[in-house]
Each structure stands twice: as structure tokens, then as C-alpha cells.
Image (cartoon, rainbow over all chains, first blue to last red; front, side, top):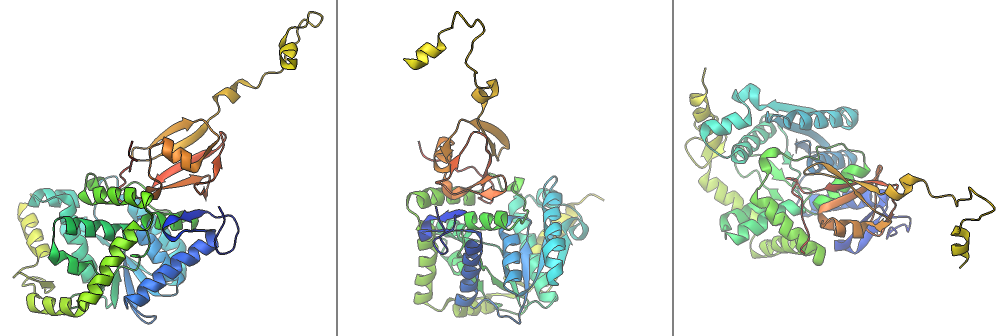
Length: 312
Length: 100
């Protein structure tokens, strides 16, 4: 199999594009897809300060790498959740990448340790408030990333969600007709109210396989074993189903998700309607001041319950 | 016929034997590193990457095949001396299996 651009030996075939690339041309393809996403969704500009949410996995480290290579001002935040046997390893990968690649590019790694601020690891917190670990984890990460972005004056927060993540989430939302969630599936969510950072997903045009290939080819070490808490999640099942379809019919995932985005854009100007909706429903949390639909935000409620339950 | 004759012991040369391939050649097979759960299997080559994934019942879209430090495409031929990693790419790490 030869590279469709330069005709040398290919390292990866991309059936959905009916293409194959050598390493330099594949890197160019990945950078181009990210640039197209940034431009098409008006995510950020050259002067903006970006905060990348990194986990130690392939997607977020690849995102940080691509943004730095494209010349953007991209710092990163890692939230150490204190998951035994997992968090230490993922943190190590993030710190290694930060030392090797990010620091020479004058980019900074910020670290938030759940154990230090919240007083317990994610597992204990979830047990204390009697909620699934993934749900407590989601609340903490959303809260801490948003807080860091707002408090430290970043213009935008970027996450490593890829085409597989978005297509699987869309499938789940459609299967359950969760119309309200469909609005939030845009790759670019505005800073609709005071206290909310703008959130973008610059990898929505790339698949997980392409991002893993990018990490391997560019010697970006990442945590291959996945979070032990994620086993059996519905999202994984949706991804499996979509990958079977993709293998039989290349291009299925992009037609599904990008097609949804096109239809949504034609139907109504989403960012405006979302911003209006947010402005009508959100107000500052009575405890911390971050935007919430309730009197107290879900993070503060969760922490209050957890702190009341933590034995001294 | 020639081969038969050559294999027939020659009375005049008592210890005549055709050199046999070394014993390990019969045991040689490519070593495949798999994840979730982490394990190693041996599969007899030569075999194309596409066929290897099919034999392992794995979906190509959910995996990368790495030989040494290099990615290999689906049409690449793998040899018995190769050490190969089949790496799942799905976040959450589930193994996606093909139908049937």
C-alpha cells in the first residue's frame, strides 16, 4: 500500500477517505483536519490562550501536540482523580510529555489533585454520595476544567473528544430521544454566561484509530490500558456497533455525525439559541459563583454531601 | 523420484543423512501481543495483517497493528520471526469482535 500523496510506502490506510499515507503525509492530514475543525467552528485564533484538558490518554495528548505544532498558545490541565493503580500511571505519561515536548514550546502543565482539594479520591467520593464513579468523575472534571479556564483567564477550553466519541454519544442520544442533549453536541460551545468558559472539540474530524496512529508515529507515550471504572459503559457498546458498521461501510461514522451537524446548522443558529437558553436558565451558584440551573451547583452539592459523610 | 532416492539410506555411506532444518524452525511462529486482558499468543505465518485480524476475530477499525516500532498496513505480510502488537484504540479498552 502506497501513500496517495507522495507514493512512498504507506504506514496507515484510511478506508473512509479511500486513502493511505506515509508518516509525514499522515501528520499533515491530521494537522489539516484539526485546522479545518478550528476554522469551520470558529474555535479560536492565533492570539487566544487555550487550556487543553489532558488525561494521559492518546486523544488529549495528541490534541496538545497538534495545537503546539500548529503554533497555538496551548497550556494543559490534568486532574488527578486518585484512582488506585491508574491515576499515577496516567499522570506520569502527562508529565513526561510536558517535560519532553510542551516545556520546550513554553507551554505549562497545571495539575489539580482531587485528593488534596476534595479530601478523598474519586472512588471514595462516589461511595460517600452513593453515585456511580463515572458520574462523580464527570462532575469534578467539568467543574475543575471550567474553573481553571475562567480563573486563569484562558479564552477557550479544548477537550480531546474525537469522531468516535461524538458519533457514539449522538447514537445514544438518538436511541433515547434525548433532544435536550443534542444541542450540546456541537464541537464548539460558547461562553454563554459569565463564569462559563468556551468549550471546543478540535478532534471531531478524526477517529480514535487515527489519533492512536498519530500518537504511535510521533512517539507520544500514552496510557493504553483504560480507566478501570469505564468497563461496561454504554458508550463503549455504541462505539463497538459503530465500528462494525464502519468496517463494513467506511465513512459511516463521519456521515452520521457530520451529517447531524450540517442538518443542525441549517435548522437554526445553534450557538445563539444555546446562549439564549443558557442565559435564561443559568445563575451563579450560591456557594461558589459558577453557573448553575439550581440554587447550588451539582459540584458544591456533591462536595457538601461528601464532606458531611467523610469520617474524621 | 529424485527426492525419494536421496532420502534412501546409502549402504556405502553409513551415516549419510540429509541436513534437517533446526528443531526450532518447526516451532517458529509470530508472537502477537494483545491487550485487555494483556496476553501473548503465537500464530503461524506468513500471514497478511488483514488475515491476522480476521483470525483473531478483531475489527480493523478498532485496532492498530504495530511491528517493532512501526505501524503496518492491512496488506502487509507478517513473517514467523515477527513480533507484533495488536493495540485496541477504543477509549475504555473494550475488545471489538467481528461477527461469526
